[in-house]
Amino acid sequence: MWFVSGCKQSSFALPWRTLLAYLVALNLLCPGSAKLRVVALNFPVTATVGQDVVLHCHLSPCKDARSLDIRWIQHRSSGLVHHYQNGEDLEQMEEYKGRTELLRDGLSDGNLYLHITAVSSSDSGSYMCTVQDDGGYVEAMVNLQVSDPFSHIVHPWKVALAVVLTLLFASFVIIVFLHRKQAAQTKNLKIKDAVLEELPVILVKKIEEFEKENSQLKKQVAELVEQIEEFEKENSQLKKQVAELVEQIEEFEREFTIDFKCCRSEETSCRTGIG
Image (cartoon, rainbow, N blue to C red; front, top):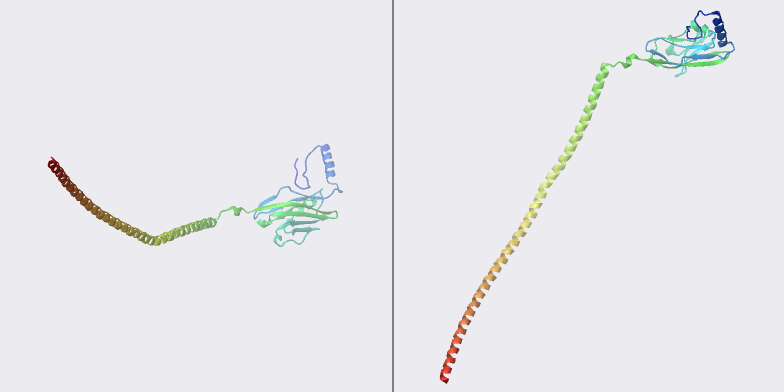
């Protein structure tokens, strides 16, 4: 069995009983008293820039739409893309003038197909198909997705620009790094220069302290030499006194010996005279 989108069905060869059942079912599906609806595709319509596209909607139950008020509205701007009423095309948005057509061949079958030529990226979005008759106002939403194949092409000038920008950024980073490194080196050199400038002053101060300590040491050595000389002088005097004392002792011993001998002689003489 073959079917065509919309309300109109293609012919087929079936047994009369099956055909009768089908006709009964079709009559039940399209009763005149049923509530009118607008049915749209559940998936988006896709196209590329420059192509023609057809947005599909149809009435359910099937109804002749030639005498209805049919409007295709851009959901984003609420502007009229195409307005059909009583067999005439009415006002529409400036950017769609000369580019849209409501396909009249399918109106009698309830098909509300809108043909758009030379679509652009700005045509992407949602479109409302609205129908108004004596029974009320009904609508359905159709999504259109327009892709630009040239947007994925990498142009040489873009590559060159990206390379140049990358090199410029890398150069900027290197320059900043070198500048900071040079600034750090300059700071270290200034610190070293300041230390070198203070070093002679420190050395002079140390030399002065050393000379002062050396002078004090020389003074202490001179005092020590004087003390040694005084000690040697006192030692010499002491030796002299000792020598004098020894002489006195020797002289005393000599005198004592002489006196002792004299006493012995006198004692002997006395003993002889007594005898």
